[in-house]
Length: 232
Image 1 (cartoon, helix red, strand yellow):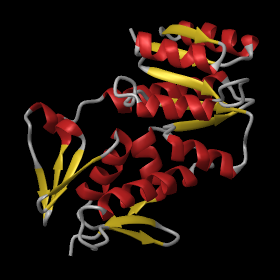
Image 2 (cartoon, one colour):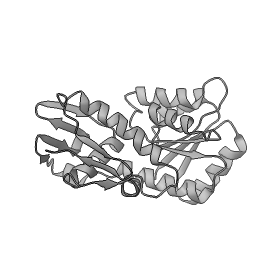
Image 3 (cartoon, one colour):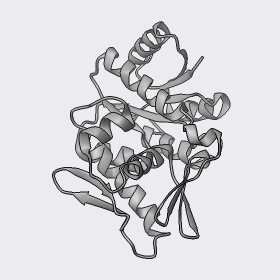
């Protein structure tokens, strides 16, 4: 059974989330501040953390940073749940390491969809990983078993989301992947305002590739359309 940690100082919202997620079959852990939340995350190693941002003493951004910096918790997906709805707030959350971002007030049905999508994506082992298969195209090699990309003799470790994005571009062999397809294939649903989600993750992915690419730009932006892998 998947364990989900809910960190929110609003006890009414925290309890409402707990009840609804338990009805969906999840085991729910609760914390009511950032200090307790990070401690419980390290202790229990949940499958997913639902994290409020505006909390006293230690806010959600700080908790997310600590989760990402800790070797035991850094791979746990984070769904930020907050009343902060400005684009800059979302970008800040994604830059820190959030996997998804849901604005309050929200529908419980939408929360359930996002939880299922995150769990499905982060817990799915690539088929090629079971056979230790390497995927090669030009001077690029993908290593699914540890979410890495190798360009010539240099290797970069990617997050699961970054790997999935790069793999999707990789599988399309230089053809453009449209933004709606990226949203649907990577996140598992089609939110109406998450284009910035893709842009932030692409930015991080490009930054890692730049360190091993000897100046070549492997991800090309097709303005107004999407992205493609430059394999020429």
